[in-house]
Image (cartoon, rainbow, N blue to C red; front, top):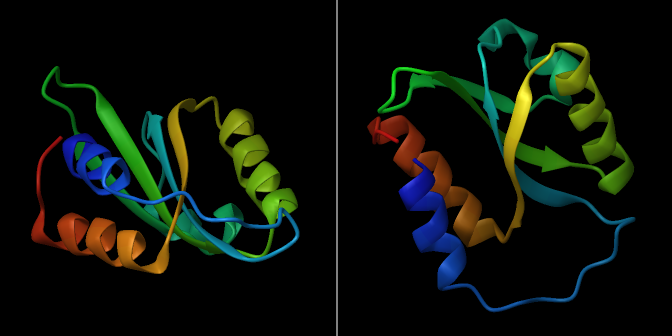
Length: 108
């Protein structure tokens, strides 16, 4: 999954955005978060995988209303003692590719 994220974002063109506008985000965190906690994390989709080193990794993807909502999700992750490894803002196309890779079950 990390390789998919790197490939998708490496080919992207920077775009202008406002912190007050909605955006698609990808968050990778070390640790286990219940998939049923999606509402607690701003409605983001949650997927749990085991990394190559055996560590549990949680991927959150989805649209957030603005960067304040992103901070709310990051604070909620901190409250759950999850270690945030990567955060990214994605274009709609990048988001579709990431979600598609998640549902194909590509490994980290």
